[in-house]
Every structure is written in C-alpha cells, then in structure tokens.
Image (cartoon, rainbow, N blue to C red; front, side, top):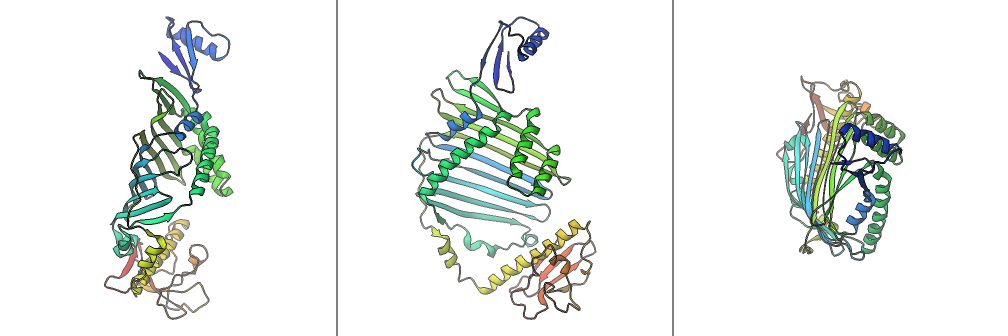
Length: 418
C-alpha cells in the first residue's frame, strides 16, 4: 500500500498493524515523535524544477498536440495546435512545423473559425491561413472580401538568429525561476516502470489551490493596475484550479513523453468564466522541416494587394465604424443598467458629428459616448459636411440597436444589429 504526501514523499507500508494503528504511527511520525521500524520509506528527489530542466534539455524532436479554450459571458474561444519541434542542441535556432484551428463564438451573434499552419525554419517564421469559416457574418461585420486575398498565401517574417539564441537562453532562465517560485504548490509522485522508465505525476491538492491562486494574483499585481489587482484578489474566492499532468523519463534520464490537463473555473463580476489547457507530447525520430516555396514578405503581400479597389477599402472602414459605434452604445448600456442613450429613437436617423462643436438639430447627438466610450465620432470616408457622419442609428420594439452605413458602395448595405 502506498501513500503520497504533499511533499512528494513516498511511504511503503509493510506492517500487519490495523489501519487505526497505522494512522497513529503516521501521525506520530509526522510530528517527529516516532518512526516505526516496520515502515520503509524513500523520499522522492524529483522536483518540478528538475523535471523542467529535463524537458528543456531534450535531445530529440518532440511531437505535440495542444488545446486551449475559455469562456466568458457570451464569448468562447478554442484553439487546437499540433506539430513537431526539432531538438535544440544549444546552438541552432528552434525549428517547428505546426497547424491548427482557432474558433471564436460570440453567443447568438455568430462565430469565426480559422484554419492555419506555420513553420519556423532557417531563421524565418512562415504562416498562412488556409480557410476562414464565418457564421452569421453580417452581425459580426465580416465579409469574404475582407480576407479572401489573404488565403493560401505564405507570409514570411525574418527572424534574427542571434536574438533567437538570446531569447532562448533567457527563456530557460526565466522558466527555471518561475518553476522554482511555484513548485512548492505542486505535488509530485513517482512510479518506476518495469523497463526502468520513471513516471512522474503532478497535481495540486485542494489545500494548495487557493495558495497558488493567491501567489499568481500577487505576481499579476506587479504588472497591472491597482484596480485590476484588487479585482483579481476578490475573484480568487470564486475560483477553483485543477491540474493533472505527468512526465515520463527514460532510465537514462532523457525526456520521453508528457501530458497536461489544467482547468480554472471562476466567476468574474458575477459572470461564470472558464479556462482550460490540455496537451500531449512524445519524442520521435528527426522530422523533416523545409521552408515553403513562394512565400512573401508582409510588405510584399501588402504591395500586391494595393490594387484593391478604393471602394472596397472605404467599405472596410464603414464596417469597422458601424461596429465601433454599436460597441460604444452597448458598453454605455452595460454601465447604465441597460439604459440606452435617450437620443436614440425608433426612427432611423443620421448620427451627428458630436465630437466637435456643431449644430446637431435633426440628427442623433451621441456626445454621451464621446465622454468615455468613443475617442471621436466615426465618419463615413465620403462624409463631406462638418455635421454629417453618413451613419444612421435606431432602436426597434425589442430595444435592439441597428447602426447602418447608407453610403455603402456596392449591392449590399452595411448594417449591424445587436
């Protein structure tokens, strides 16, 4: 029978005593008063920092799969990535080949899914988007011509190899410091397999969850505003964290495989929020990572797209503007118990340019938004008068707001309702 304590100590019980007596012996031993000769124990010497060092010093390529996801209010995000990374020998830059999907859902408004792939090889970072799927695009203000010319094009970003090596070394140092800071909260148990492989399981006990969250909050306050830090401390009371992970190490001390599953559930401002991470990896034979052909520098790609019609560019600005206005109105309502700016009526009316001193008679004056929610009132690219924005706004019987751009160029009018 084996018991693992929070320190990672392993106790093997061979005593014929009853469980009651065994519990008494363990309690006395923990107090330093008695160590029964019938209990043989060996302290696990492995620490989180040592495990991190073994993984960082890996000498073989790693195949990996990872999933990251989270939800907050009406928003949810999920990203999956799989790929392979060449081994790092301390001198050559990292080489990685990966692909994945990023999906964002905005409740009833719509969703976006992006299929991508990338490579880091020969001192360059290459990435391309292979597909974009949009559901309810009009509500999100997204149109196919916004991105169709960017699909299936490899974009190249040159990397400074000396900078890569410097960042890699600094990253190792920083990771070691971070691991050392938090490893006292992580429980590690060790199992030795028949072939000599050592299996290290990592977890967080319920008693350590709150302590770790408090420590993370304290670290966050170093890089955030006092208000944000105070909010983080308050939300710890409504947060739970779970960790289930393992790292396999071969008999010769080499990293072989790992898996991690972590979840954080919280309540922020009365709204449920969740965040989860899962991933697996294993060492494999040397992968073949090659630089993609036909790649373009970002500047070259932008230059090749510069022939786009000016009307498309103006329509893109209009889509951004109507969403900016709608977001400002929505945020105002959140901060005012659901009340909308009183100037918005049920009749579609042009919005006045209220960020400057003009006569807004007959137009909708949204100066309440300019005080906090809008830097300035957006204007249609072809608005010609001092007061005009050429954007309209109205509310329906259900209190939903519609912002439109009547001057849209093309067959389809730009209009967003929320």
